[in-house]
Image (cartoon, rainbow, N blue to C red; front, side, top):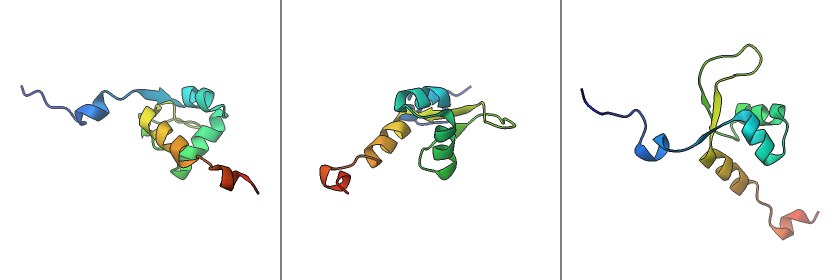
Length: 80
């Protein structure tokens, strides 16, 4: 038997978060997290299916960091 991995070592060791954990960390509703995933703004992995909400949805920590980096507003942008 060979010792092969399906994902690169850096991805295999990355922590995957449940949607509820991401919602709590970002102070968003669970529905808002699912909308971000559905729109493609927040990358995710889906394991299994759910009738209303995908119970097997997992979001890599790096995706949360990338989303936060992309939503950063500079002081000149914040003034309307």
